[in-house]
Length: 90
Image 1: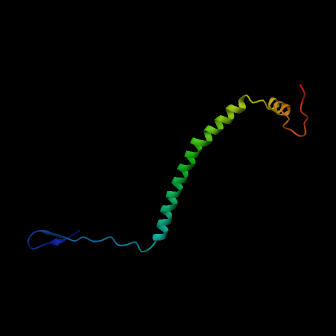
Image 2 (image 1 turned 120 degrees about the vertical axis):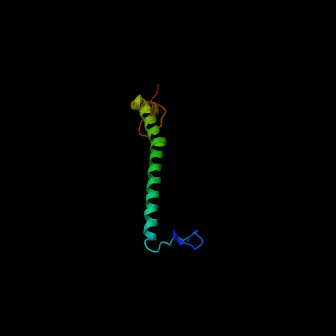
Image 3 (image 1 turned 180 degrees about the horizontal axis):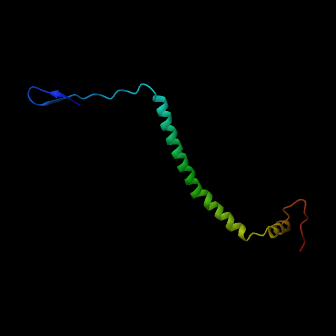
């Protein structure tokens, strides 16, 4: 900020320090932290969804595509894993 013209013809400039924020500091800090927290949460959710959830769903879909529950039950029954079902003799 220029003050005026000095008698020697050079400009005199005065540097001023910024005033500290006295009102609303807590409110502004909370707003900033909420925005940062929200953005980081959205990034974390998107990262989890596309690196963990989607591949897991694909693996489950691939597994159950040709899964036969009755064949699995009969296999476990033949091994004698169930107390309520007798082991089949072959």
